[in-house]
Length: 125
Image 1 (cartoon, rainbow, N blue to C red):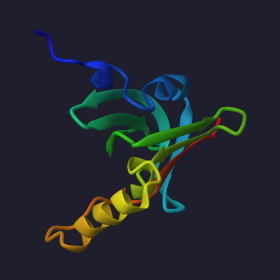
Image 2 (cartoon, rainbow, N blue to C red):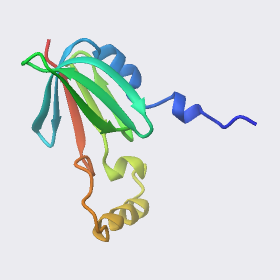
Image 3 (cartoon, helix red, strand yellow):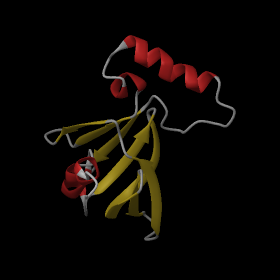
Image 4 (cartoon, rainbow, N blue to C red):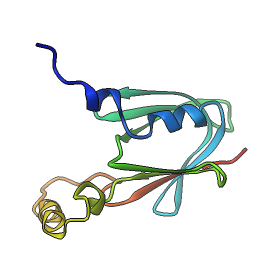
């Protein structure tokens, strides 16, 4: 019996990254720019998407982002939003959202920079 790979074959945002491939981009989290350059390559590795970006100094930088819970794409504006908000994964059900947020309150280790945020990819060319 083969495992069901429907989810693994249908990762949110992968088709949009193909559209963005070989374009100049700016990646923002919480209105702060974290990476800029040309998206050369991307690949999925377990629960992350690895991006290879050519920066302005002609050096390749690798950047790793978690697979998003939701994706919004606005090609006319050159914008992509990767949604990591709790409300998105809980499908706007308040009770589930509260339980998920309570995990952060009792977490001993630091949480991800993407926790309950939206990552914005701006196509700059």
